[in-house]
Image 1 (cartoon, one colour):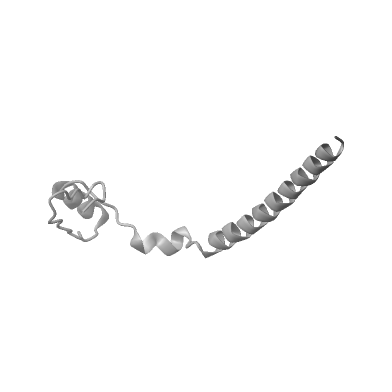
Image 2 (cartoon, rainbow, N blue to C red; image 1 turned 135 degrees about the vertical axis):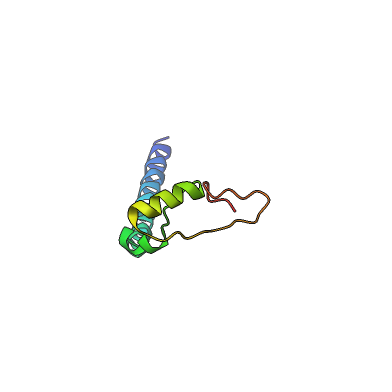
Amino acid sequence: MRLLPIALLLLMGLMVHTSSAQDAAARKVLDRFEQLQPSEDDLAMYRLDWESSMSAAEQRAKQEQRPICLVIIHARYGDITSGHC
């Protein structure tokens, strides 16, 4: 009868050891993933400040003295404000 609690303790110890090894491996992968992520500065050139209408874009372009980049979406379900095109 004493063998069962000892076997159970050994099994639990093995599970904890395996779990901590998996946690360490997962942490290593996540750390590497975070290192490879581009910074906000790296992604700045991919961000566009959208306006919902041409008149709003014209007003903003005039205020900021910047050109307008016009994107025309020709899709049945396109919606420029949600990014779905």
